[in-house]
Length: 192
View 1 (cartoon, rainbow, N blue to C red):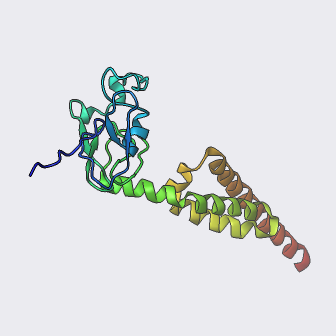
View 2: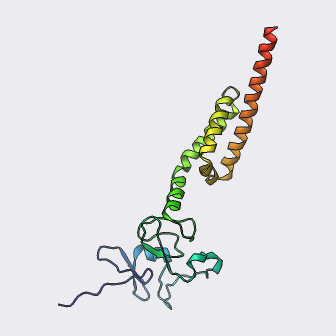
View 3: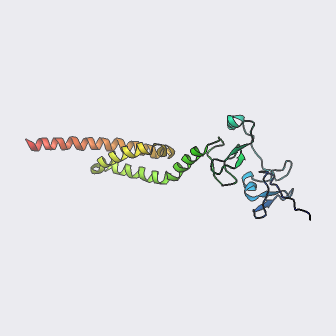
């Protein structure tokens, strides 16, 4: 009994399973994993008309530790992927750059990315509390504690939120000092 040969994807060079979604090149009839076709933007067979136009990578763009190596381990699923990959074809994890990351670094970056909407909301609330005069002491205390604990998340936000945080802290501290001074003066005047 003849065994059916397994197809290999020309892009990732992995075998194509029976249950995997595939795409065939209309020019050369090469069969690809659907996600490989999309990631490459077309065919990967040299000389085919469907090959996408690509820019050459400069040597500076490839991490020094991966010069001469074609693969790196995905920090999320630990499968082998291309050294310059920005997305793992096995688990779908995406990376900010082609620079290799270890699992701890990837998890920390993913956690910061997941916390950004909450960080954005909290930074906005602290700013609002900080500029309302009678809530300024609460905004100052909460803002100082929160900013120290969430320094990395605040740095990952757009610069506007970092500026709002700094302005809010300065205003809240100034308002708090003004409230304390005015309260002291009022008590001093009423006491005499």
